[in-house]
Structure formats: C-alpha cells, structure tokens
Length: 233
Image (cartoon, rainbow, N blue to C red):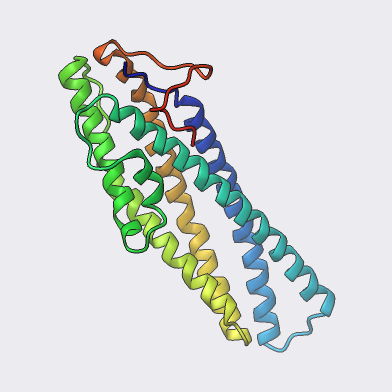
C-alpha cells in the first residue's frame, strides 16, 4: 500500500526559518554598514577609540554566530521538506530520476551541488503537474518559470558567501576589510529576493501537494503509523 506522509508542517517550519534568517540578514546589513563607516573613518585618519573597535567586533561576532546557527537550521528544515515532498511523489509514479536520499545528498557533493538539486526540484514540479492532470483530473498547476531565478540567486549567494569568507579570512589591512564588508552587504541584498522566491517555491508546491492524496485513492500516513518506506529525516 502506498501511503504518503504529511509534509505541511515541514513546509511551514522551513518557511518560518527562512523569514527568521532574512530578518537576521537585514540586521547584518545595517551592522556591516556600521562597520564600513568605522573602517572608512580609520582609513581617513579620523580618531577611533579602542572601545568602538571592540564594540564593532563583538557585534559582528554575535551576528555572525547567530547567522551561522540559524542558517544551518534553515538549510536542514528546507532539505527535510524537500526530501519528504520528493518521497511522497515517488509513491505516485513509476519513475523519477533520483531517490529521496539524493535529494539530501546532492546538496553536499562538489560540482553535483551546482545543478542536481535544481533538476530534482524542477522534476518534482513538472511530474506532480503531469500526475494531477492525468490521474486526478486536476486543473490547478504550479509553474516552473521562477525556478531558474531561484537557483540562479542561490548560486550567486553562495559565490558571494565564499568571497566574503575568503576575504575576511585573509584580511590583513583596512582596504581588504572594507572590500569584504561591501561584498557582505551585497550578499545581504541578494538574500532578499532569494528568500522571497524560496518561500514561493515551498508554498506553491505545498499548496498543491495535498492533491496527490486523491491519486489512486491513497491517504496520508499519521505520525503514529510506521512503514519502512517512510524516511524520518
């Protein structure tokens, strides 16, 4: 018997974490601007006290730590939702190009992570549309038109993150610190459209995923039911 698992709560949790990280991105932007202003003051020869420098470093350190922790949690909640959605879809079709395990693993393999998650997401969208049209007589469809923007912004955001990390790690003068701060602020700005599109990606699919229940008369498995087919991740 093919029993799909509930995924609505995972979608809500993933979306909530994206909003939280976005809020921290905004805070980080203003914090980086304060650091940029401080660095420009130092560069121009203006008097800057040690207490101002220490306060800046402490603020940036706290924000950096919180961002790392919350971003990691956000990634986990997104992948958990993504994997569950793909798993449920597997139960409704004879063939998909990947397994639900690959949904998680593909994000962490060099080079493959640059294209595979996008391919899986697009396949999930298009295959769900096909199944609902052909087997459930549903006319509601989800578009894949913005998935390219979603993935493009994700790649750009990660490139910027790598630049910021390497610049900060190798910063040994005011100019390099200033450059790293500017790039960090650009990354904060990019995160706004990326977050909005990612929320749309999750919400659009979540809004239509429940319709898969009507295909072949299947039902959602409750949290108290167990089956070897259902990943707990």
